[in-house]
Every structure is written in C-alpha cells, then in structure tokens.
Image (cartoon, rainbow, N blue to C red; front, side):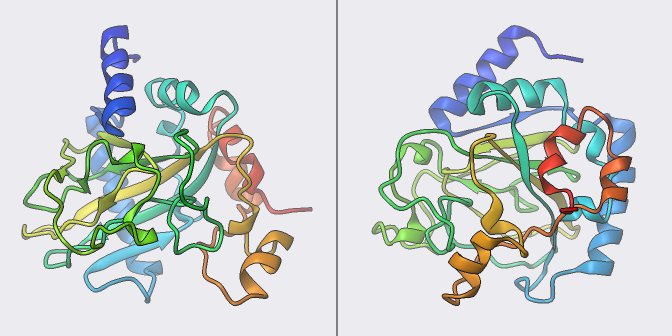
Length: 271
C-alpha cells in the first residue's frame, strides 16, 4: 500500500535536507520474524571471517536468501529511488549485517563510491549530486540501546568525508550525531554521501539488518565484479582494495519476483 502524498513529500524533504529518512512498515509485520531468522541462518553459515569482532557480515546476501526480495521493489521505496536517481535504477549491493551485543563503535564514513579508501571512488571534492542510495532494512528494531546506525544529518552536502582526511577524526563522536531508529520492518534510506558509523550494541540481543544499495542506470558497477576488466585494471593489477560483488546465478535470478528482476539483471552471470 502506498503512503499518502504528504508522507512521501515529507520523506523526500527529509532526504534532501538531512540526507536520510525512515519509511515505516515496508515489510509486513507478519513476515519480519521469518525474514530475520533466515538472515541469521545465512550469517551463521557464511559469515565473513574478516568482519570486525561481534559483527556478522555476508556480502551478496541475495545469492543465499531471497526472502527479502519481494519488498525491494516496494512502491514507496521505488518512488523515492526514482525521484532521486531517475528511472531504471539498479541494485548494486545486498549485505547482511548483524551487530552482536558488545560490538565496537565504527568509524565515520560515506558509502561506495564516496569512500575514499576504495579503488573505485569519486575523488574529493565530489559534486553535490545524488549518485547512490543506501537502504538499511531493519529486521530488528533499531534503537539507541541496540546500536541503531549513527548518522550526521546534513553531512551529505559536504564535498568531503572523514575517509578522505577532511579534518574530522573518523573514530570520535561528532557533535550533531544521532541514532537512526525505527521499528522492525522499517527501512532507513540514506544518500550514500551521508556520514554514518556502526553504533555499539549495548542490549542483550543482536541487531539484525540487510543493507541494500540502489544505483542509477549510468553508474559503472563493473569495478565491483570480480571477473571484470575494470576490476583487473583498477584493483587487482595495482594491488588496491575494493568491495566484491559476485555475479548472480541464473537459478537465483529466476526465483526473484518479476518486479524485482530488472533491479538485478545486470548482476546475472555472463553467458
């Protein structure tokens, strides 16, 4: 069901001015627990061994579980995505992230392609334009206690971020930081330029989420694909670091809802 025009307009205004907003109840309440259990099971089986302590992380999550897929083309999500990125958007990343109790606070950063530590980054000072959106699907409630994502409102309008030595210490609290909070089933939407950080989970329960990023049709994602020529030239040969997004097997693609398949068609395995 589509939210009222007023609510969507408010969300859009919040995104443009502050760099983030939360859409409530995108995942139906009777489906959240099942999707969360699937996510926890995938992380238990495929957890990245190089993830920070007490952080469960699995990249290319869609390859392992498709229970979240029906909601990735939700009307409310795509209305905002299309308004900010134009039509024919694509999904660039799907990552499961579980903050276990006792995890450490992370450093301030902006997401790819604005993180200056990645080989495939937009160099600073980057233009004031929306080029990528990060969405965090709350499979647990997000609160200050359990480590709801830390954000710096308005920081998306700065042409630099702390990964590029802009004078802001990456690991220090920032005066205007706040926690992005919401109920389970809600979605945090951020301009990927927004400064944000992992917050410590001080609760007794894990904070479970899936991160899904949306890109415009024109943004080159090939540097992320392990077998691509762009990655060989820009990452492998010079010995740099970059995120890795393996191709989507055709049997997984075929199981996706028809409305979601266009968002992933570019990630299918080459013939």
